[in-house]
Image (cartoon, rainbow, N blue to C red; front, side, top):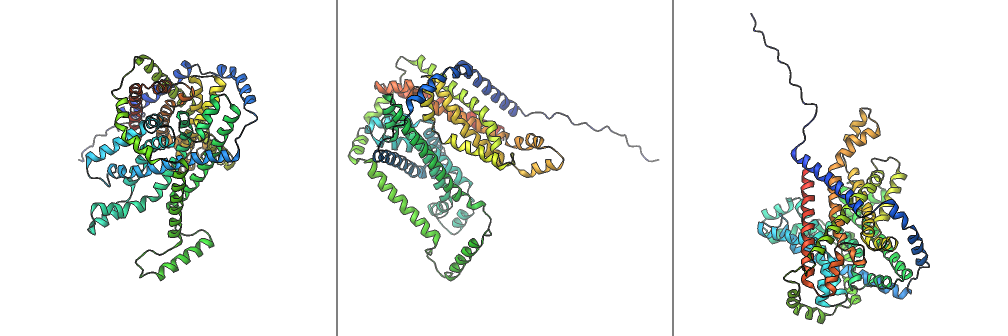
Length: 560
């Protein structure tokens, strides 16, 4: 008799997947951020009625703004040239300063864990200290002029440039370095022979991106005495000359848009080569590649690199950069004597900033710090509400109509081209001094940044998943919510926290024109030479910035 097997009932899987504790905490953090942002909007008094009441001020401002009063062509070109020279020197110096820090920070180039940690700490601190604070310090050391602005923007830029360079080195393929190591090359020879050539496109692309950012920053630094077109704007608005001030602001807007378009094209040309097809696409490309192949076959026995078109292009680019450096130094009129005297007095200047002290205004400082955080939270929430639909409509894999997606991409470029300082000036005049102007300026600026990040994240999703869902008969709306949005959601959370970090840093600076925040206390302390109070305020800003950055890093890991 055959044995009878007892039939077991299959275990039904749970219909609801359980959430990991980390995801639950991350969801709670996001909800807390949204609630805090909405509370900040209400507490700051930002509403449609308040904005509508400022309509009369807006009409009056436009009436006082026209006709625009542009300076003479010679004077305008001189101011633009000085601004571009300051920005170019600051960006170039940041690249030079970043290289040794990056070599010590990247795991592929540094075996010492202590040096890597120290270098990473320097990068974080450089990003955390506002360039306005650095400018105040260097103005005390070297006096008024371009030197303070160049050093301030250069040191602050090391934070971003160094981080991106270090990440790029760690993302490089380690094969060439290992081959050099097998061939008997020393550690220094491995780094010099394999990394610079592979990293050169990323170095140039990052420098161009930082040039765009420094151009916007240079306008803000004009309010504390750094030269250029920013100083001219501050002097015009100080005497309520809106016709001259807004004319110069329009010039800055044009400069920002032009440089962003040019640098974006160059970055695409540098970084897009790796994604291009191996086979030429046109008969001109095929003829060009055949000619290059013939030249290469003739030089099979040649050891030195030939003077090809690529080598000639690199040589000319290096020559142009060298000429621009010389012209920039001549334009800003750097004084070696002033630099030397400033360096000699550096210990005495540092002694003025330490030890930190609240100067008896500790409570007021904390209140302004909370106000700055409220401005950044409110601007982040308001910017996200507007940026989300714009970013979705700008994504080419979501909106099949190229005209619609192109139109919203054009809106993004236009909004991103307007510096936050220009927006803050307009809102200060329209809505009055205070936190409302700063919040609205940051919110509008956030629309340009966040909508671009959202559109790029949506376009980087895996289209194969979308095609598989479409094959099951799903509608476009179902495909978007079930596959596209679900893939991009972790990136969206990361972008929002990056935006919060950016908005808080910007909110600490917009007080220079009366847009609210802790910058008002910072500048007052600097004006009356209470530099120990300046250090105290900077320390508080650092704590908040590092806390937001740590929270953003945890969120990126939690939702990954």
